[in-house]
Length: 615
Image 1 (spheres, helix red, strand yellow):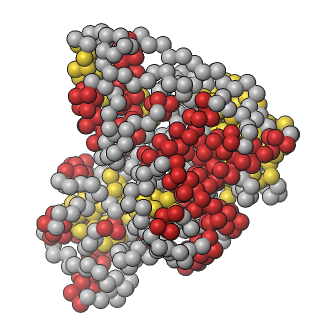
Image 2 (image 1 turned 45 degrees about the vertical axis):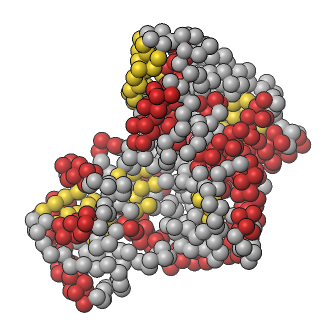
């Protein structure tokens, strides 16, 4: 576990971040003033957006902290919601350890409590004046935006970052990185890797996609794939050298995706990546070369003919402003929480782990400026999402089907259509996940019976991810929205809205396969168990999203391209917005999204600075 990040992540200012250290964390009753008695509210910025708390003070001490509102993912954020208020009260300070696995929620609570304490003390947070003549504007203050700013500043540019939320850090997800010829590979005796081997993995994995979708026609920019392969190791080493916690420093194979030719995936501490990059950015802020406008949303690109010359933004107070610069970088992330864009290009039914602010702003801005969006129809589907009305698009519960035995998949006609488990090495994962893309209305029905449920419980497993005590299962049964039960196959089928007669035939046939150990239809070889009756369960599942894969076309200089394949002067991009499918083709590869924030950030920052200096 790591301490909370610098004050620049924790402080929420109306227009700009308190990047110079104002609003620092304090002990109750410190030199900032004796805390008054009363209850005060504060707002912080967490993974899902704003988080609101009330803090009860008495006798100069923090007595009680209540989380009033938050938009973080239940389950994932639970440790922070439970433990951080207790830790703050015990320490009488907001400078406490983050909850493991919930670092962003932890920091959001700390920030909110600190702001409540500041409100109690009447602390006025000063605004920082933005640079008057910037060379580079960056829309988006996530990992890619911060790396872009660092690199542009290192190359002599003056930079302003516009971030629509109240904090830097964005949606940097997971903890995996990938790269070739790294120091960690060398430490572990791996000397046979190369950028060319990594690139050939991209080629090989794309061939696998063509086997799943033989009708698919698509192109990807192999120059971008080669650029990533050549610079990925440098990116991993850069984070390592900055002091990121790389845990056991052992290169591995992806745990969820197809194996690579050489172990080159690294699992570190996600919070530490953000922390070290934030500290590096702070150096350039302190030097007067970078300034940051928080709660400031990029609305559209300013044009001079075909050239991008700036950005129009909406400030926290609702007013609009225009900023001019020779170069602009879009680092706005994906569109995984935009129902409009996902339905337009991908799925009709889905849930998402992406926060509410991830709405494809950069995609829309770039397209209006003449960019061409490519590979938007491709989107990695994570399987087994449970969509409840009360949560809207937010993914709260899911079934990680790769982990669980016995279950079968059926479609709305009550028919099986695939080997549900595939090979143990994960090489069939993409094929299995494609079930949700191909299914009518993107719905796949997962079925098991009481004996299977009892067996899972006896083995200490759950069917819903993270449901150790099976309370989530019970809650879903009570809701009756996506988990249906019945004493007969026909009964449960009717409740789930699938063909009961066909389902009965499917179960009878599958039971024969389970008895004989041979799946004559789809070749399943693992963990087949007969359905024995009693009580039947059917889950209605949808895909869930973590990242999007299409975006504006660009070249290996980080320049966004128009319909003629020409660079749009003054426009660059970095991070998720570029679309992994544009750089790597239609496949899933462990660690490329996170490492890409660094690779593409460095590319965009250096190219944008060079262009600005040439003007």
